[in-house]
Amino acid sequence: MLKRRFKMAKKRTTTTKTGTMVFEAFVSKPTSSVRKIGVIRSGVAASVVDGMVEYLAVPKNVIFGVLRTPESTAHRLIKDKRNLDSAASERVMRVADILRMAEETFGGREAATQWLKSTNLALGGPTPLSMLDTELGAAEVRRVLSAINYGAAL
Image (cartoon, rainbow, N blue to C red; front, side, top):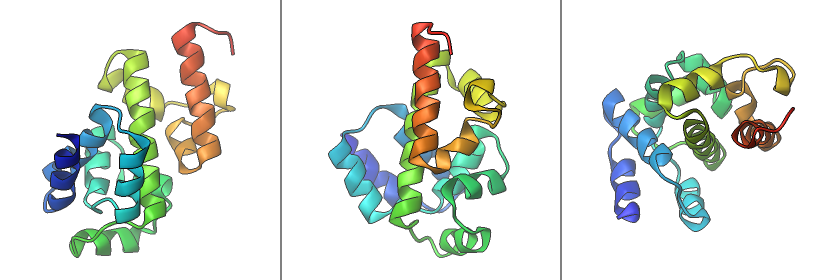
């Protein structure tokens, strides 16, 4: 079933609603590492950018920054219904994983997205979302989420 959902997600690339559905499929439940590697290597549909914008309620330039993809390149890929490269696809999966963890921690999408977009002293001041462009930044966000989950002092 999960395999079919990812195949369907890759095929749907025409509208913002579809991009949202693609991103929601990545956030909705944990995926095995083997499956993630396959998705990353084949590339995520560029329309996922629109889905991320809608899901997180942020401007596109924020998503372009997290994905480290130039705006002109992303727009061209979306227009041509092509896939992101493997590096940007990996960042999409990283954001989805962190978002799922935040939703579990805070009890839902709205609280999780608000936390990701708010400055965070435990991270030295930037927003958790802005740190997700690198794996080291994502590891720090995971550390803070784990501390919140288990009531540890930071």
